[in-house]
Image (cartoon, rainbow, N blue to C red; front, side, top):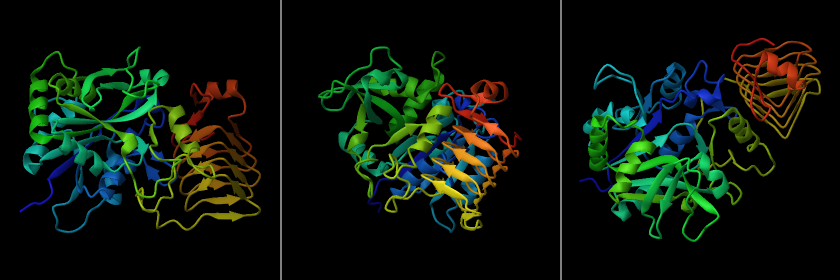
Length: 405
């Protein structure tokens, strides 16, 4: 007889990620490399696995090959057990159409819920950087007796208009859920803050199925989890806010407790990397009590520094060689080379990048296998950069995959 509830986790990983272009030109957003040796999806999968949830379906759609390969290689649960982490592509089970929204993605894969017969369903996004113990949210969801729980993070009210916002009463029952409101609601007892939706939900399985099937028939719906399904439960007084500030993750410091970042833009992606590299980082990747599992880098030798090559206030991944170059305030992924006299400063270099002799790279993101030729300059002349590359609102220069500068 089962003593624990049966939990199915669904990870929504089908987003196109247009605001991260050109990093998403050739890959799905959750497959974008992050933090030297990770991909964005590794954070949600690590949180689920660390919490003991081992039945995970990852719903994919947009340019998913590298994402599917990563999941099969880095997240392979070997052995004849009921545990799995499986990529599930759009299957057109309910008509010849692709996913038309996050809720439609789940309803088109509703066979997963029918087959697993879970008591509760976790629905999390695939492209946020954070640590969280989902089991604490599940426990609180069960205790409330509600059909739906929404994870909310406290953000300054003046910044909340960029998010889906939650209005809740003193008991945590959600009274209103609005997308990007001009006048964000406040938190009871904390008038300077607003609950912003983290895009993480827990549902009672039977109630979720009913909501999805009703939404499928609604021609006026956009079939979106935040825009349609959550308001459905709010209208029935069946939605609860889970306050992320109360989530206690082993090994988390006071400095990085409650850290969560939506890396949906080039600037937020860049800033999240800068959060990693200070002496006392805002987000600490070196927490062995709640590890973020990464791509297998065992085939790469350790990083090497030769010919007076140096790196300061930086993260340098396996397989890198700094040969007479200088790296400052940067994150280097696996298999990066920085040649004699080159300078890399305040930058993010993805796997396989080559920086030639005397080259200068500042305030930039270089995608996989970019070659910076000898003496080339990036991030020094804004006008010249805008003619050649994508430059974000914050002035971050982005060089696309496989380009030669």
